[in-house]
Length: 112
Length: 116
Image 1 (cartoon, rainbow over the protein chains, first blue to last red):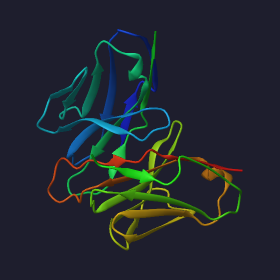
Image 2: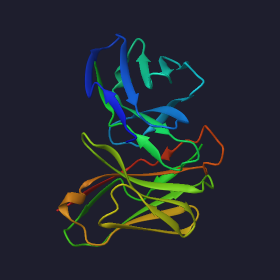
Image 3: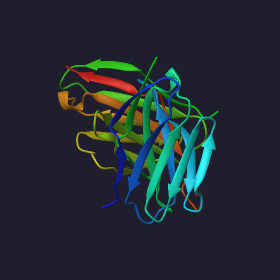
Image 4: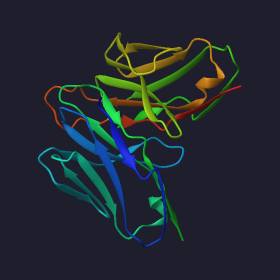
């Protein structure tokens, strides 16, 4: 069964600290993996996209890694800010398929 | 910038009412999607459309129908709203898959529907 699982389900960190969110998937075949950020009451917005040939990609303080062999991805947030408080969703696409497979998300709270 | 606009941010309806959720995108995307999002369950696909007048059931189509009469507009219809349809509804659009590896779903701001 094609699945995307994220951990932890929720996370609380202090402002300025780093954190890492995990995404494991069993989707096959695999086309790409995206991390989305969803602020409370808003729609998700794409942060990064990675294809199977890419190991790491950065977007400012966000760095995503991908290990296509173990089917694991992580999103590392450096020097967290209060505005990083949001849900982070891992989404996997399959070749030539119109639909996406979503993880259930990690809820991150950054406290002052 | 891609813009996906949902007609309402918040909606309160009574049980048994017929409810229309509208979504419009301005990027000439072939694909459009309707999801619902519930705590702990993530996004679940209700229906998607890959062309005008074309639709495919997603994972949870029961109790819903859709309409795509024009390429830019995708409507979700709750024929007879029930309390278990209280949820956040998200519309998304994207380019046709083809051979692209970088297809992205662009989301609207969401509609928080409460059925009482």
